[in-house]
Image 1 (cartoon, rainbow, N blue to C red):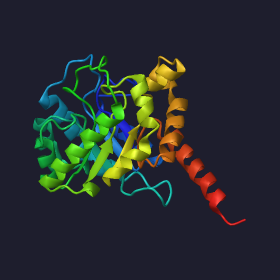
Image 2: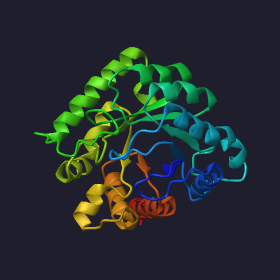
Image 3: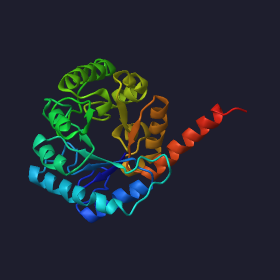
Image 4: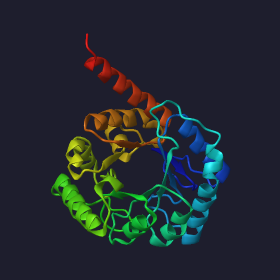
Length: 275
């Protein structure tokens, strides 16, 4: 999953308000092997004010309405790539979602932790897969001092309850994607416990997305302040996530991630080949 920020406030410094530039960034990621492009129109940074609903809708529509046209420039990198690539819309306000889903998008990437089922109802209405992220409290509000008695138990209780409610709404596990919410309402040790226990997230029968790219936890462990310098740590987290059975990885540097995944698969396949 390649990350494209149609905003000027990305924590990683790669956002843009220029729709042409955002589209070309997405195409470069597709050519590098991205199966999914995740579009965000508002920064998730908690020390910034939220933009207006209409600003967010305008940015999304500017991208979505030209996506298929621009995608005609591209072709799959290999025969394993999902084609055409899937478009994921990264937003959480229902007022935005109901205005953009009619124009496209195969995944709704919701960082709100579903305090209500309204966004799930909209996903069901439009036949959109739903990505649910674990967190607590209101989006765009920092929860950096939250202490978990047992973060893994809390994560599992959260998804158990949400999945039950979503299935009662009519969404099947195959339509859902699970995101443990690295760096959201969690401390460094919490994040590391989740990375080390990815295989436990397979119990829900849904795809598991591991958000690894340039995360604060990487900076904490390696002493790297600038997010753009955390790609090596990102790749290490991808390898660990693959070992735990994660299905999707959300990244800024698609080329490096693609090479890492291909190399791991090649090495493991060689080990399994008859001598």
